[in-house]
Image 1 (cartoon, protein in one colour):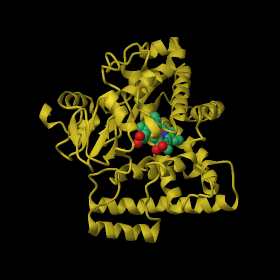
Image 2 (cartoon, helix red, strand yellow):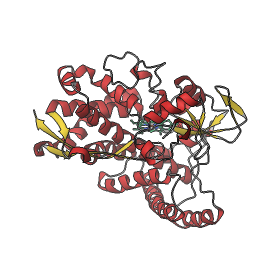
Image 3 (tube, helix red, strand yellow):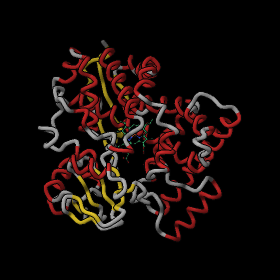
Image 4 (cartoon, protein in one colour):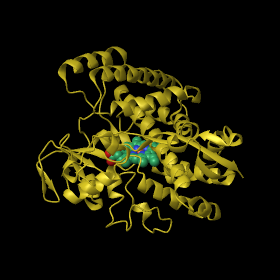
Length: 410
Ligand code: HEM
C-alpha cells in the first residue's frame, strides 16, 4: 500500500489498520478514501469536534438501507411478511428522537448500577473460567470473551440464557448486515435471519406487556415518556442494537486484553504483582485495540474539516481508534503504558451525545474477568502457534474470531 492508495476497504488493512491511520493522517485532516469516497478523520481533536457537532454531522447516515431498487423491493417484502420494517433508532438517530430512545435504556448501566452488579459479574466470570480451568487450554474467545458479555446482556434484557446460541447468531447477523460489500443474495439471507430476531422480540414483548418484570425489555415495552411509547419497530431495532453493541465489542476487548497479556513482555508478571493496575490495563487495551475502530456521520450541509471541503451528503468516518493513537494527545501512542496518566481520555466509547451507554458495564466486565483470570492462572501463552489468534476483517470493528490459549493453574 503506497501512501496515495490508502484505503480502508481492503481486508488486510482492516485486520491491522494502524499504519493506514498514520498514512491517512499524514495526507489530510479529512482523507478521502478513493475506494468509496468516505472522508476519514483521524486527528483526536477533530474526531471529537465532529462527534459533538450533531447538526452538521448527522448519525442518520442511511448507510444501513439497501439502495438497489429491485433488491430493496424484495427485501422490503421479506421484512413485511416475516418481521417488521427497519427504522432508525438511538445510535443511528439524531435528537430529539435519539434522546427519547436513550432515556429508555440509559439508567440500566450507570456507575452505581454496575457497582451493585459486581458479585453477579464475578459469578458469571467464575462460571465461565470453571469450564476450562482444569484443562490447561481454552478456546478463549468462544468460551470466555463471547460468553461473559452474552450472558450479561441476556440477563439484563430479560431473555433466557438457554437461547444464548441464538443471541450470538443474531448479534453476528447484525454485524454481517453492516458489511457494505454484501451481495444481494447475502442481503436476502441476512434479512430472513434478522426477521427471526424480530419475531422473537415481538413474542417476548407480548409476554412482558402481559406480565411486567424487572428487566430492560419489560421496562422498554411498558415505558411511557410524557405519553410517548415505543413502537414495535423501534423496540425491535433498539434490542438489536443493544445485543450487538454489548456483545461484539466487549468480547473483542477481552480477547485483545488476553493477546496483550501473552505478547507484551513482563506485562503478566507486573499485573500479578500489582493487581491495582488492572483498571489502567483495561483502559490501555481499549485505547490501543479499540473494538469499534470508527463510525459514520453524514454531512447535512456543505462544510469543512481542517480546511478540507466536505460537500453536503458526504459520509465522514470518525476513526476513534486513530484518535486514540494520535501522538499529540498520547505521547508514544502505540505503546501500552501502565503509567500513562491520561489513558481514560481515549474515545473508544465515542464522544458527545451518543457516548456509549454500556461503557461502565464493559469496563466492569473486563476488569473482573482479567482480575479473576490472573488470580486463578499464570503463564498465559498461545496453544496453536501462529494459528492461535485470528482477527476477522471488518470495515469498522476490530474483532477477534479465534483465540486459543494455554496456561498453568495457580
Ligand atoms: C468495550 C465495549 C464497548 C465499546 C468499545 C463500545 C463502543 C461504543 C461507541 C464508540 C459508541 C458511540 C456510537 C456513536 O457515536 O455513533 C457506543 C454507543 C452505544 N453503546 Fe457501546 N460499546 C461497548 C459496550 C457496550 C455495552 C456493554 C452496551 C450495552 C449494554 C453498549 C450499548 C451502546 C448503546 C446502546 C449505544 C448507543 C448510544 C447512543 O446512540 O446514544 N455498548 N458504544
